[in-house]
Amino acid sequence: MEWKLDSDSVDWDELSNLYRIAPLGEKKPADLRTSFGNSRYTCFVYADGILAGVGRALADGVDCSYICDVAVHPQYQGTGLGRDIVTRLRDLSAGHRKIILYANPGKEGFYLKLGFKRMRTAMAIFANPARAVETGLVED
Image (tube, rainbow, N blue to C red; front, top):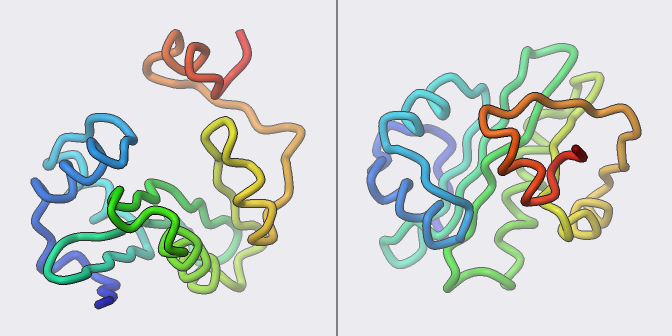
């Protein structure tokens, strides 16, 4: 596996496809370029020339780092790559007062094993509130 911590050589169409097949939804290549470009920490993992996994963290350098957009190619799911990406982003975020993420429903146990704790006070506003309710991300 080859790890890259910058986006200099990323094929944004390939990254968009990774989110689609992971499956984590549709993300436009231009939007991914912007969101990863605005992130303090990024991880791109390649195996045999293909993008096998990815993740990023928005961070301010002191108070908060938010790990998000972790995705693993179906061919590499179950190999520990997702765990390794989250661990790398968590380690890069060390020193922040808090490191947060939100898990897809049913995946909370995965993050508990990595040292994350459930939050009781998290609140959110989604661009598509009906979908957020439908997928179990928020309560109506």
